[in-house]
Amino acid sequence: MLNYDELKKKYKNNADRFAYIDFMLRFTGTIKRSDLGNQFNLSDASASKVLAAYNDACPLNMRYDHSIRSNILKSSYEPLIEWKAEVALGMLANGFNKNKLSDHSNTVIPYEKVTSLPDQMKVDTVSAITRAISNGYPVFCEYYSKSGKGRSKRELVPLQILNDGEFWLFRAYDRSETDVSRNPFKFFNFSRVLKLENNQASLGFKKQKHEDLDSDPDWNVEIPLDLKLHEDRNEKEREEIRIDFGLSSGTDQLFVLKRAAFLWILKNKWNIDTRSPEQIKEENKRLEKANMAGSKKYYKFRLCNLDMIKVLLETNDCYERF
Image 1: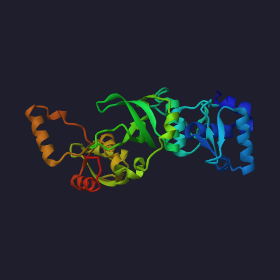
Image 2 (image 1 turned 30 degrees about the vertical axis):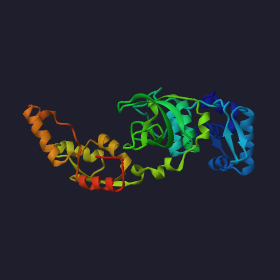
Image 3 (image 1 turned 180 degrees about the horizontal axis):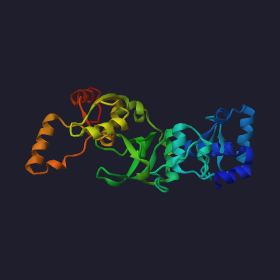
Image 4 (image 1 turned 90 degrees about the vertical axis):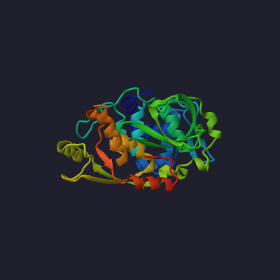
């Protein structure tokens, strides 16, 4: 397995094209002549020559599948180039970028990600999940959940990748969910997938129609969030929040439309107070009685249209609740 500099030295003009083929095979499971042509503005004949050259260099990595008219990943695949999970996910989300391949890539201005961790996500785990998304089949894994289940075996049908500003997540249909009151469509953190079983057998258990995002009520309903800067915040804190959220000076309201599936994430990320006036009154009484008035939970926003949201969620048969 080569790093990008070694790849450039060994394969010269074909290095970037080989890296793209390797990327597509590993993280989507397929590479078509048209993919290569569109990425590098190559004719069909030129793209075919590059694919043939890659196959000569890496004979264990792909074979042509006539049924789908595409080159597909072989089980004997060996990576040609080193891949970092976070880099690969970024490319899947934003497009292939050869400048991300080198450890000393030239940035327009100096850049470094503060929260990056070298072993947060395993690249083999990430690639197995993203291939499952691309090809519509499940993965069998051991997953660590914060919900109280701890470690548990799951059969998941991955559907989409997301980034919440801190972690890379994927939305999946959980075939292991037995509680009918819970949404089988859930978010999973890539870093909490502890162990993947051999998923070759899963190719025979393709995604079913009811397991697609089109059948996920929380995904397909947009909810209006009418947020107001929280009354517990002083003016200095309010101005800081306005700046952080792109609000005009003196503005106290933020109105956004978000998928119902995102509500729990946003509630915690944005410190949204979703309590009713009655709940707030009761909580304040409790804290005062316990002489703990200074122990109030920190909120940036109050949700002003809670009743409307409850009606929308119920009307659209959403599982998400505030």
